[in-house]
Image (tube, rainbow, N blue to C red):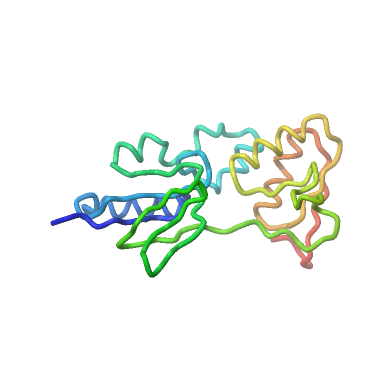
Length: 188
């Protein structure tokens, strides 16, 4: 029996977990697995990003599947390659680097994105965020926030949910006074 092509868009927690389950059910015998991941890492536990920011864990401790895991399981990983388009009629995924992968089965597990409130003045003319404005979603975000926090006196965190409060606590560990701005009548 010829293997089918399985393409997974997103190598985060959900995409990797789906592939782990497929492999556990002898999926390696049924599928040639290819994954697109827009970050240059294996997958990691995003829930623990606040621990990385506050210094209670090193980023190496939050990896679930390092890059070797993909190779060891025969998975082609397009690392740091965002999937730009899905051509449903021709059953192909196009990567931002020009990669084209045909699929028989497709899993889209791209996760969520940080919500940025529509506040005037957050971006430069090129639509990039102004210096000192960050989202809190990735390892790179953690690194950038930690680097920027060094020697700063104050910070504002927009959002009083779990991640916002954890980001605020992480910033306090850098000696930064933090104001949390939240739209609801109570936190979380």
